[in-house]
Length: 275
Image (cartoon, rainbow, N blue to C red):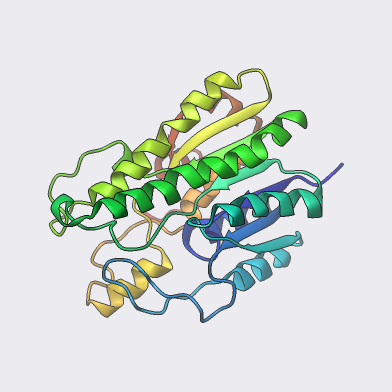
């Protein structure tokens, strides 16, 4: 049998990295994209960033290969649409097929944690371009070919901010409107595509990861004296849920829905105890 393949965006660290490794452990060859190609190049570019952060495509590729699967690292930037569609073409050129797309990458630049009156219109445009429009371009680049091959799975990593209102403003436990608006817009896509592509063998699922402690968060927490103050799940928890959705036939029953990753993994015993 031909080995199934996956493409995971934003896979240099965090949920994307863990997902790529989990998919490899499940037997898939995995193409991975990110801006950070080599270890030591990663820098937090968020509102209060500037710190070096670990993770790279090189490191994730090595972990995939350690699982006995092929890795295909591809440099990609959410603000560069051509790089995204080129990534899709590269997978088909190298491997001839794509069975699973995981839209995990998210724009991490300024504007995710600023209040409305301090957020320029250009920031809203940037967030929508990176988190919605260009990710739709990637879906459009692969979806016709997936349908022609008999179907596949597209997982969109969403966020609680897409479906909930904050209990407090930014700086007091809340989140920025530009980030939330963009995630909310992208969140709406899976359910619509599930309806439009019914009967094609395609499965579209949103995954809400919950509070996950990534490498970026660990670095910033240590630097600000908040290490361990806000515990969360490791990235391997949503990764376990995504791997299940990509490999279990039962995922078809969840077509068009939103899966809460931590509850899903806990209920099905997909991950060792973390809570």
